[in-house]
Image (cartoon, rainbow, N blue to C red):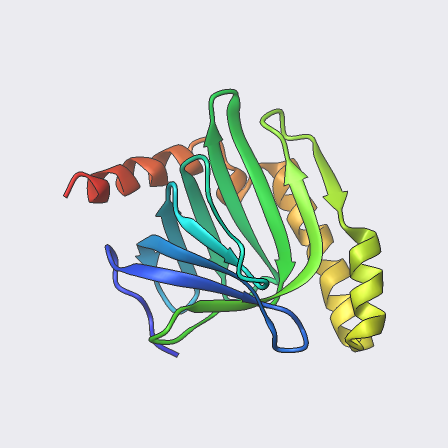
Length: 177
């Protein structure tokens, strides 16, 4: 597994457990790239859905991927503050094509006041049966929901007060060139 270089533009590919592509983000600028953590920034990037439909993101976002966590975090900078969208997923892998992960349906939406809601439990149950998620995946995901909510409560990692702003400032330095 390679590591993307700081300043490099990469794609992000989300898959489902059955190996089918779920979603592709066309352009994300790497702000930090190590074997453990990839932090990126994007704004108004094209997203392609599995059915071929496309849409463009509406606001700047900082994305956070960790090789040991079964989730990734998107911090979106909006007028009323930072909104987070957290995908329960496999840890990332990076190859020359893209940063890749498996999306496991469950999401946590975090509001600027740090309240949050768990989303898509029905979709998770449906896909768990349909695609045959192993019991071990179910246990790992439930443990990672707990880890993620602990990070939210403690304002750690991407939820720390200045995390998104600091990385967004770095992202802006790349956009000027």
